Length: 239
Image (tube, rainbow, N blue to C red; front, side):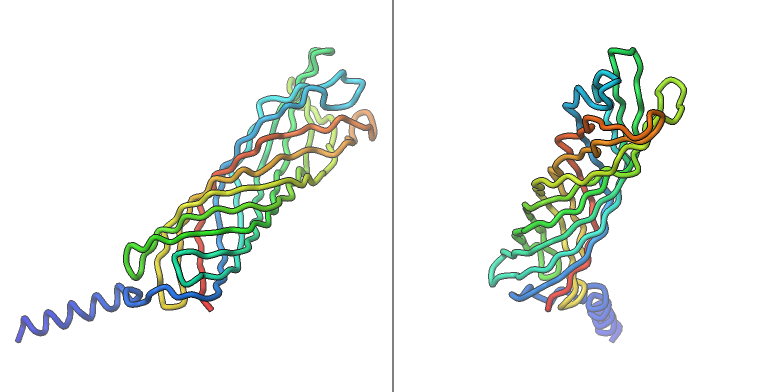
């Protein structure tokens, strides 16, 4: 009698802890949202940035701060391990760089925000580990709108304010590779943890500055070959 009761209790406990084990993936539409933490890296080929009177600034020491993002996708799972979707992602973080002006032997420091808004077409393949758990590999390509904003220029030596650099949005291609694990909470809901590597395109400032010399035209400062690693938590619902 005790053994029978113990077996029943164990069965009930497994049913409560693993409610999704009997839920197999089905073809159909799905939608989801995600939040992410990101690290970005980049460099610059700018050798003549800034106002003409300064003789051209050589950009270096490009640094991105930690970034956070939010996104969503809507897609269709085929009657196979494959699925396709359209996704949107918004990522924002801090950015800084320095520019040396050899003609005058001076240097400026720049600090502001880097924001990316990307729209991508994605494909994914699932590798089931059980009825409840799958490994999901994905890839995406699309277009990104990268903005540098709130950029302030200061003197490296004294920290004195020099100028506010104009805001600008640069459009370019974006590509992503991802790998994650998803757990089916219910027949319709999935919780995921995904890591991604993103070729995020480039950024540049506007061609004006306003500050100690008034409003002047400049050669824009460019940040090239931006690359990002994301770690995202997602929630997806089947329809």
